[in-house]
Image 1: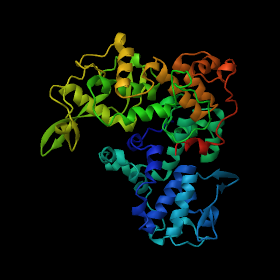
Image 2 (image 1 turned 60 degrees about the horizontal axis):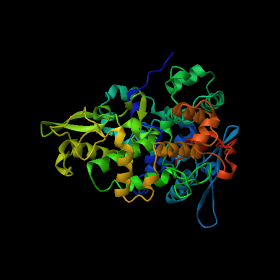
Image 3 (image 1 turned 90 degrees about the vertical axis):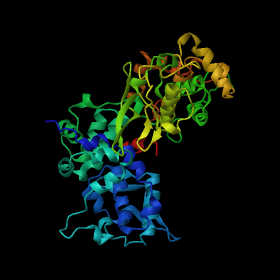
Image 4 (image 1 turned 135 degrees about the vertical axis):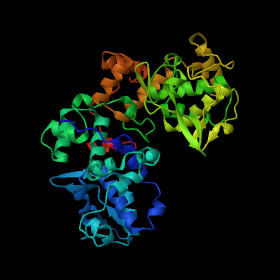
Length: 465
């Protein structure tokens, strides 16, 4: 039997809920009720434990009192017969809010710290309130869902569903992952596990490189720094990304704007710039009707899922707005976008042609492959990039691959996906392409990633927090 995905599940993700749980903390510190609910939410998401269990965790299981009136949160939470590590960011939040709650009795269960949270009938508060407060980006879409559908959705297990999906999204499906999740959720079979998480079978689980957060802080594996200065045609992913995004602030010219966005999209998707030249606006944008004072206004926004020539294209939030403004520049041939902005977003210009190319020349024609290398070097020189002449057609895709490896380490599903992405048959071919070898004096030595994997599932899903 297959559990259909509920409409609300399309708009709320683990990442969004977890990140938003750490926002507006100054506001919730003024309410004991809100502080307790925030602790419950963060613990539920980061551990994947059932809500009833989290409600009844005693403070002494989480922390001890320090010598300076501080709360020292334990590194691990004992659950049944095993230990769950508590992420450093979660430990900080619990410690901070425990002190703001005026040091509740350590023998007290979390849920009983504020008696008003428990309803008169003895049942606990609706978890939907917590989850929906973290869905900032999609609240408008969620409000459109029929109320009767929302009322039948079991929000008490939704944090576990988000956790389970995140585990599979980060690690892919393996027998070990399946065994862990069944034990963790107290399920007996794969069929039960798939039903619980909303999948038909393991083939329905999509482990994709695009789900890896390339902007994650820090790295897992420290690889040898190879860059333009010491003779290579690439540099660190983060250095090139920061340069390009910093230069997005000001409008330069149609060609320079195009090149910056082209290189960013190439960098974050591991697709050569020349392959992206065929990208058209209708493949990444959609028009929505927005009502302002009973007048219908056509606005533009990026599609939720962008597919280009069998590639799912990822556009990070950091430069989505720049891409929309580039569309306005291209269609109106002016760098003044303010008159095309309304409460509903960017208004689609009347003269807009969605069949036109995303990347254009200064004469507003399509950027073509014969002139691409020259135009990239010229634009980067205009932007004062010191290594413009050293950029090649594979620079951005090598940076992309190396970045994934330093985040994921010796993670076999990731390495397999990279081989498929770059069309290599062996790990050796992949590593040679990404220059994951020793120094030039030891060119044949493959960089040693063996065994360098994250210690546990919990560390794996929170790597970018």
